[in-house]
Length: 338
Image (cartoon, rainbow, N blue to C red; front, side, top):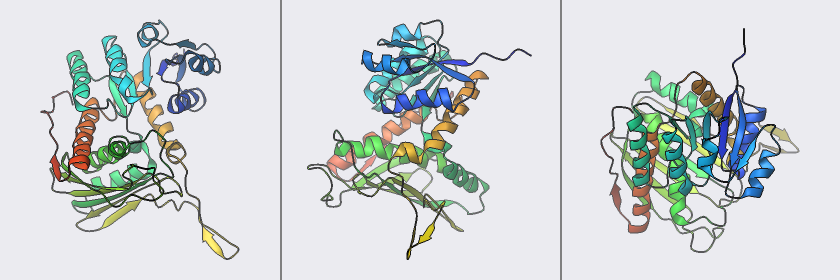
């Protein structure tokens, strides 16, 4: 039997995330190889391409996607560059895995959604990797059994050891809480209808003028209330935790107690220091699922609609942060394709 050729992937963006995805495709994922990398920084693109046999470096997305050895696209560039790359891929009807955000705002997300809708079939999977984390998958499966009853509340904690120097108060919502936005919609199967953001006094460890931490509250169309503690300068590590409170019980994930040690009069474990470490297996699983589905001619996972909905919720959240009060989420009617 003739072995099928691997999926030839162009990776757009060769920064921390893009370079890690190139490594992942080459060393972890089966059925794919990196045939092209694209970055506005030509030297960085060349350096990444040099580590992969048969990989070509480009500085222009359109040129890369027109290459004969590109079957699919992985977008890991900065958020503002996503729309142009997505539209270029959709124009060529190429399958895409796009790191979150789909785009930074709902208006541009709608333009991408409309371009995909005109094709008449899905082409885009959005990289909300928590859906592929073993703990979140187990929690989702438990909720779907119905044995805990209807979900009433969800408590989330999202902590980073330190924020990058470019981080703004708005980005705590648009870049960090975006994950809780998607996971809330996915776990509960409900849309978020309103957002409120409370502002505790800033931590002394936060950079000047950064409103950190924040306390975000979602309301859903199913009557659930969801809170998110976002604290990006906690100082001790990276933590993501969630507890769902239902009518007949609760379920909690993210305690990080895979191994507990006892020694020298102390007990304890370790805390991840960044998201790439904490969600390494989720990223591996996400890419393998995408490659397998793409080779079958299918598109699964978070859709362009999910990316648009997350952008709309985050926009409402940023308004709530800056203007105060409760802000309603405005969504267009969901197209039949999604």
